[in-house]
Length: 313
Image (cartoon, rainbow, N blue to C red; front, top):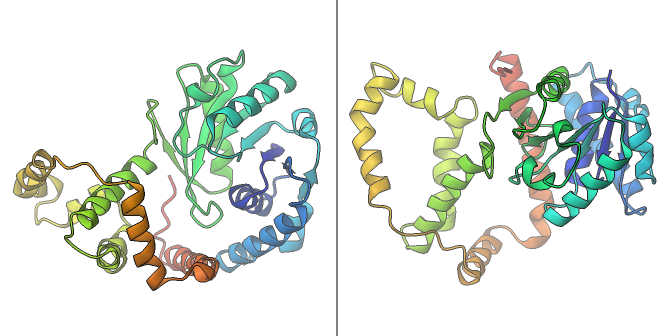
């Protein structure tokens, strides 16, 4: 198997390390902060325990043995064939990192980024090795949500695209192939559409933040756990998707035409939302709630797997 290099030992890097190591890959993790190693190891062990709940064939000790933490980024350049960037979402940091890796890695090494919305052409615009660079954007947390967006630039070679797809296919991920570069890719554009509408409904006073959340939590989200928007409407009209579009298309079109208000992402609205959310969930409970989220995700994954609903394509 390919040896996987990961830059950044935070939540995303730890999550990638857990899933790749659990599937038998050797993983080399680097972080410029030498004080994060112990926290990284504890986090990965927790993530592996969550993965074992979904797949009891996973051996936690063997998986941990597959991970090597290093303090020299050149070790990744000299020993890995696929390097996944999990650095902060700051363009200057990613450009500097990719420049360093491009100059130090052999030509056959694929350079991939977990970027949430920046196209790879923006990160690599001044590189010689644009052809070996690609986006592989996960859903957080990657080890529990088996979905990755593969987004090449016009300069990315077909060989790099195919090898990247193959690597993520080997860890059982559903691959979303982004045919053309676009800010935010597919996932965050869909999430952004919902978020923007939620912010508008809240700031215009139509409902409280929690009631808007409840619409998804206890309504739409129950369907979305196992089907997407097109399958949803395909099942919501007697004659299928074309029937649905004929029945309701004008309603959605008119909502969009009449939607002249921009979402309010201002500091004032953020403070107001923060106050409402903290009344429901205090700051010191955020981590505990995130852990419960992971527990619910792993149980949902197990249920979907048992019902043969975890469709990977």
